[in-house]
Image (cartoon, rainbow, N blue to C red; front, side, top):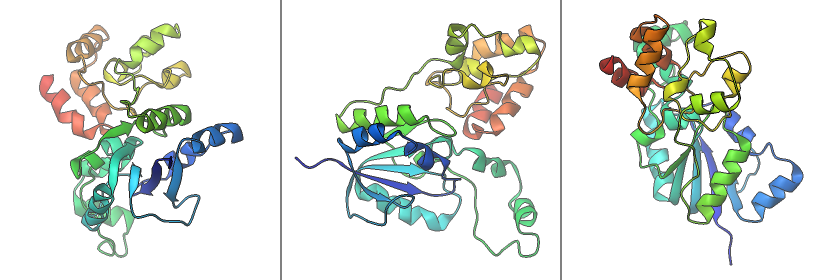
Length: 251
């Protein structure tokens, strides 16, 4: 029986998620290649294919000229996966959505601001139907392997749908709010083992929100530490600009 055909594509991104996908030990790579046939992947091979069982898309859409290419990939794919934060939520690229177009054009290309096409940043699901997603910036390599195997078997991706706070408590971390820091952990999807809070940082939301974020819990935390809800929603600029207005209105 032929193995499922898997292809990787990239739009506006650093391509770090694709590099993470192949950051496997030799035996792990062989394990993956035993169940899939990678038929297109600019980072690793020159071959191309006409149809795909699974297409993994890294990056967000920041130019209108990229839309037809994405739609063509969608039409040729049985399953399309938004791969990493840029594809999943718009990612860091979406920071420009808070600025005037002429301002960021001049900032990036001061001598010729109109040289390159650009428009508002959109996540992949804002342009075409997405069947699954792999969160993170960058993605977790072993989570990627697990999700791809689940898709090959026709299963739903096994992605946690509870908050990062659960993992912080499991790791016996001191809440970063106790350190005078902001944190989006109460509403952000777990699965990262709370790496940022566990290593002196805070959760800034690269994995996106849980399906039903507990806004009241987040507000209660903010009030407990005498922080305004506006301060919290401002943190959503980095990875979650699409969610920001929802949270702001709930405040």
